[in-house]
Amino acid sequence: MHRLTRRTFTKSAVVATASFALDSFSQTVPSQQQVGIAPIGLGSIAEVFMRSVGKSENAKLTGLVTGHPVEKGKKFASMYGVADSSIYTYETFDSIRNNHGIDAVYVALPNSMHCEYTIRAAEAGKHVFCEKPMAISSNECKRMIDACRHAGVKLMIGYRLHHEPVFLKLHEMVRSGAFGEILQFQAGFYGMKNKQEWRLNRALAGGGSMFDLGIYALNTIRWFTGEEPVDFRAVVATRDKTGKFTSVEETINCLLKFPSGILAECGSSYGQNGTNFLQINGTTGHVRVEPAFTYGDTVLKYEGKTESGDLAGSGAVYDPDQFVTEVTHFANCVLQNAEPATPGEEGLKDLLSVEEIYKAAGSSMA
Ligand code: NAD
Image (tube, helix red, strand yellow):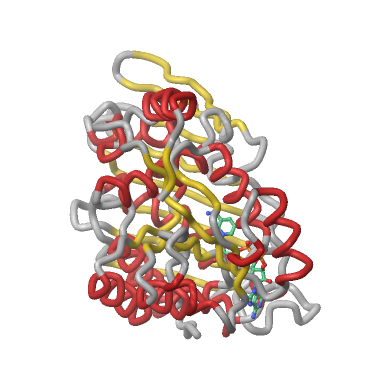
């Protein structure tokens, strides 16, 4: 682990203040150390991650794992000051156990590879920050949790909205009854934002838009209700005729019921050119967030009403940057030996629901 300077320590206090609502993060400013992290798979989200690590005060990029060590490895190593000797391939990956500058890995691979690399990282004694969806089956999630527990390393799943001030504020309002008793959630995420081929291959992706986009709605609603759905109805549909969606669904709509009686209607689609939103209806108020789930230079906007009057607000995804707050939280959990806000169990619960959703739709998973 790496020491912080006085300048960086002061800045990390500012980051800590910005993430006011994160319990395990807001308690203490990180100790004067940095967690060394190596991303595995240097694709599109890994680039966002590397930029965020660069802005975080308690994390540092100390390794890179890539199938393209010369092209991508050397490029990012020179951008972020990673030693050439800390560039690994998938074949040499297990030798990171001997690299004491790497405390943790960030798994940013296609979904079906999350399980293998999480387990191999745990066996190498490294903490794991794994992207969503956690894996392509609940069985894989359980193996990942067991491996990390056995190795005594942290496992956090990349649910970035748990670090987003707009979502934290609305979560607190919902939980404190600001909208009365919640009766229904509606959420949707439409349009294929990232167009890599593996997303259309069930063996690599696990499923279609549900795994990539629908999971944002599902996870947010599970988080906001604090309950697990018990009744599942779902339909999958593919209208595309080009053969692009022979392996995974284009569109999925589902209706979930929670033990308290809350209903949730969720939809996601790769084919539909639509927006992304979250609508919450209670007995005395309501709120709609739109856009809700995209990142980049996006400004999240919400509008609604509570008993005390109209409600409206906004927040830019990058101000404060939800990805920076997320990695700072992960590093802090490593430094403080604290439980991440979204541990492996959170990813497992999503996959258990996803399996029920596909079952209800009469569609098999990978
Ligand atoms: P990507 O295709 O841009 O990157 C995947 C990386 O894996 C590439 O570097 C690729 O070279 C590598 N790879 C290794 N083996 C591969 C194989 N057999 N096939 C294809 N690629 C292979 O994908 P991405 O958009 O960065 O997504 C990676 C993960 O991150 C996914 O699990 C995705 O769900 C997740 N993700 C999360 C967010 C978020 O906001 N939290 C956003 C995008 C993606």
